[in-house]
Length: 320
Image (tube, rainbow, N blue to C red):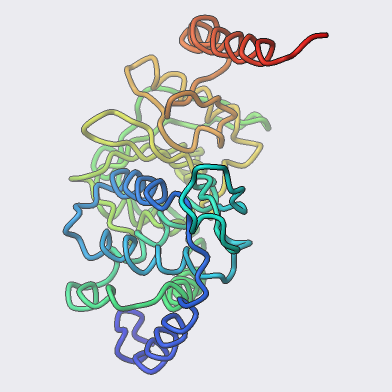
């Protein structure tokens, strides 16, 4: 099957689009649609998507259209809106919802969609603006299925050390005592191999050595177990992945944390997937609980905010 052509699915797309037009009559309007737009923009910025990109336009049209449908609400990050005095009259209607911000699962699914879109050629990419959400999710499932049949089966690393990857001079122990080396991937074949073995999108999600810096934890057989993706311009660690885009295996958790701590010591910051390494989030950055930066934030920012919130509550309490 040619995964890169939407032409085969024209009839399906037309039927779904017609369904969408009908159900839009009973759409669940959002009380804060602008917040949804801002959240989408943040995800697109994370992927360095230009606003003129067909991918960006798809999320601000088809994705939003699906989000506003009174359908599959359990899959969306929304809650029923509670009407407050003084709000516009339309917000008092039934089926009005509040967007609550993307969960980590939703954000990961969106990033995965972007990776899929990045595999399309220019001709097919130019057509996605008319492709409904339901059809795109089906295409992504097929893409995942086709990749799972060919990835994760390599037994030997064909790459050359010093050419395709380099050792960063740091070694960590797994929970089982295995020695793991911190590696930087240097070539497209290295990216492809990592994506194949780890069964994630590094191979065909638009990642290139010219645009992305990738670190990995290699065992003694030069097989990867954890992948870190870094923003080249800002030294931001944006993804921390084990196999199948999951959090690193428990056996490699401590080694992952130690590697990240060493990178933080070199000036890197964690802005994504910190929860995959038991990190704490504050103002869009992640911290380890025992690092000095977190202690300062907790003392000077979090505690004062908590105290103010408690003081505000106390001020509202009416005593007899």
